[in-house]
Image 1 (cartoon, rainbow, N blue to C red):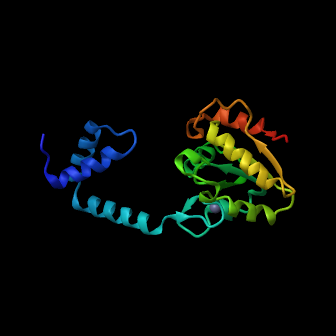
Image 2 (image 1 turned 90 degrees about the vertical axis):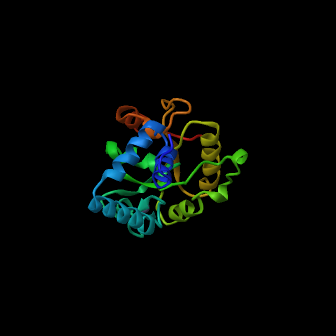
Image 3 (image 1 turned 180 degrees about the vertical axis):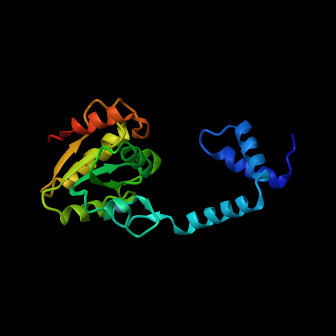
Length: 200
Ligand SMILES: [Zn+2]
């Protein structure tokens, strides 16, 4: 089927999103086309605002509308408890489940020499700078249990060991290769409660 070229661009965009097959992409594009002008204009303006205004928090690396995100600005949270995550999407799962009262630090990936991702490509320097300003903080390293996750964890432990900081990891109850985005509340809560200090 030859869709109009100007519709096909929209179909292709939707199709490129994870989890959206061709059929759904076509349906979404047609629904978008059939939306009234007000909705389309609002959508265009939302897209532009997102592109222009959503940025990374200057402290933790979470996406936010402001220079500092709501979590970093929240004085009711424990500054001395920092949960290190691979990706900001993991944070949504932690927050959705409302199980953590500390703060976060988003690495923006895992060390993976095979994929050309080295420590300096990640948001690690700013983590060290944060630690330096705290008094005996605890850092919980909550990364996917994979080779890259382990490698990143060991690297972080090495770097952070130079400071007076307790370093812990999620319990071994996290299944191998499990993406934290998909962990249910009970398992995530348990993995966090049963966290253990990383031994030398
Ligand atoms: Zn933040």
